[in-house]
Image (tube, rainbow, N blue to C red; front, side):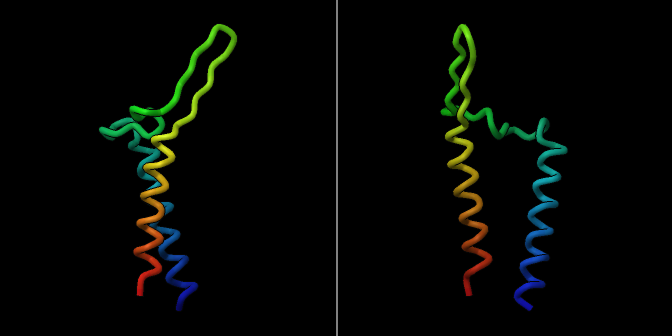
Length: 71
């Protein structure tokens, strides 16, 4: 029963991620381009680190895992 629930939850998560990728350009929040993400463009190269996007996704995944694991 636990394995079945995990597979269904994983499938739902993949569907949600797929929909976000397909309709990502139409969403009001652009993941990877949030205010606070570090972007440095120099003469010979550039550096990009999406720190705020990482924090947001971490909080979202933590909330999902908490909802799944609560009894």
